[in-house]
Image (cartoon, rainbow, N blue to C red; front, side, top):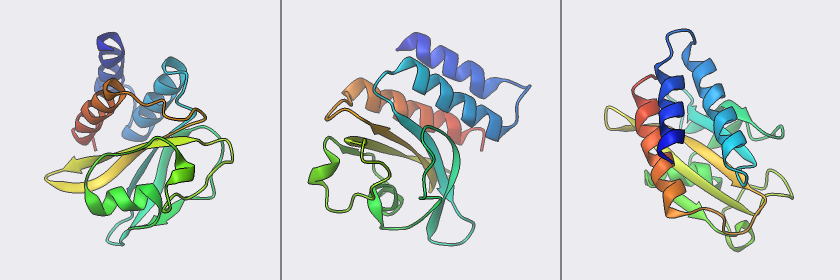
Length: 149
C-alpha cells in the first residue's frame, strides 16, 4: 500500500499535468492496481447548487453526471460528510443503480477549508470487497487531492 501511495503522490505532485489530468491518472492507477475497483471516479460540488457533478473517472459510462444532494450514496455522503461503505448495494435502499454488474460501493468525501467539496466514488463487481486498508488509502488520497483543487 505504501508503494501505491508513493505513486499516487507522484501523480498529484507532477508539474506537467493540470488538476483534471492528475485526477484522471489517479483513477487509472487505482483501476489498474486494485482488481476489484471496477468504476473509479470523482464527483465535485456543482457551483452553488446542492448537487454533485461528475468529474474524471475510469469505467463504464454513467448516466449519473449530476446527482442531487441526498440522492444515492454519493448524494448521501455530500450531506453526511462521512465515508460510506456499502458491502452489498442490493441491501441499500438509497442506492442509485449505475450498472447491473455493481455489487458494492465506497464513497469518501473530499474536504477543502473544512467544506465538503467532492468525493471519490468506487464501484465493485464483487460483494463486500472493500477493506479497512482501502478505506484508509482512499481517505488519505482525498486529503491529498484537497491540496491540489
